[in-house]
Length: 465
Image (tube, rainbow, N blue to C red; front, side, top):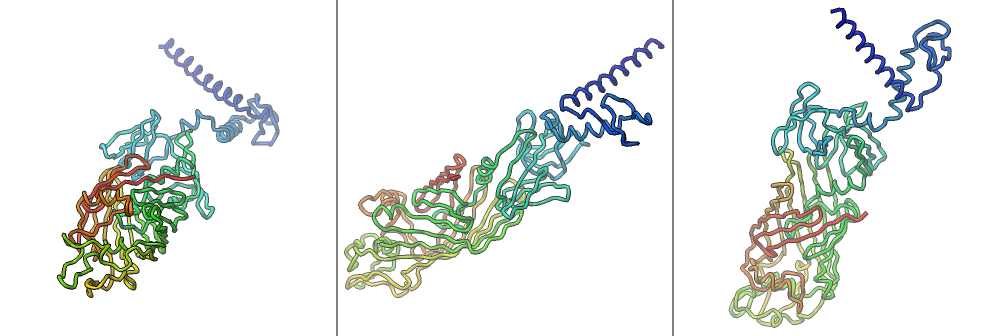
């Protein structure tokens, strides 16, 4: 027993001496001062001294304080990597692990300080706390406010940061710049911008606009138009098919009202479609149901009706044409936290309210056609991270059901107005609905399909720095 006791004493002494040697060696590596001040009498002693020279008091406490300050100021990679992440129940964000796994979910329970129970779309995972990298944000708001601290939670609209003075919830749209850190890995603001844009707003429900404009410096290209986001409240588009045939046009949209919280976003926008040399055939085709043969009562949208070219006096005239719309939109996170959904309501009218082309004798505009209008209500819903469901109900006294084949023929009509969908013939439906899906091929490209003209959707958006 005496031999074992002596061995244990020897081992304990060796461990203590080794620890002191390691601490002192590390202190030498970070170049600690050559002297230390005795806390009892203020006398300067050599670092190698164990006691204050004047009164014999131990220097251990003073040396420990100096070492702590040095370690905190230098922060080598070994220390940053070993720093534990701030973990709390209810924390919802992307968790980066030391083995390079990435988990998206919410902490629903903690087993002491060692295990975090994270609920994900794939199920509940038990993750050792030591494996979760600390996530820090260093951000500056548009008004100059600066926050630095661990990220507690994050969604499509906001990010919550723990500061020494409380939790700060910052709307993402208010962020001017932000660097993010996973352990010792820095994610620059350039990459963060791309990440924020992945949570994009829907700017159209099929061919109808929402109240959310393009984000600043974003370029938009679809099968019908191109656009650009100038500011958070102003975007501009043009229909390139009309431009090709000389009908130069601009479609500005202004966001009049905007309110955003941590879980929802509401906007009201006013838009215009302005055409400088508009072909009268285009709108006459759209409202062909309201052009009537006085003798037979036949409408020009019916099968067998004469062509528009023989009905109007000056069908080749190029005139000014414009429409205006007002749309209200709201989007919010789903209760599950996995995606979002939004609803949109709008009203549009145009200059056919006060001016229309004149038909020849024997044809006339129906007296019931007084106000051209389109009223719509739509919804978008995230089914998965890449697949979105869209549905829309609308009342439109210029709407006709047009078959897929006719839509394709009209779109590729290079003898008339290419890259547009216009048709004189169709089944008049003043109230109708449409639904379909869009799929995100990547962060820029979207493909979609639905059951009304134009049937297929394609658009590409990319960020310009």
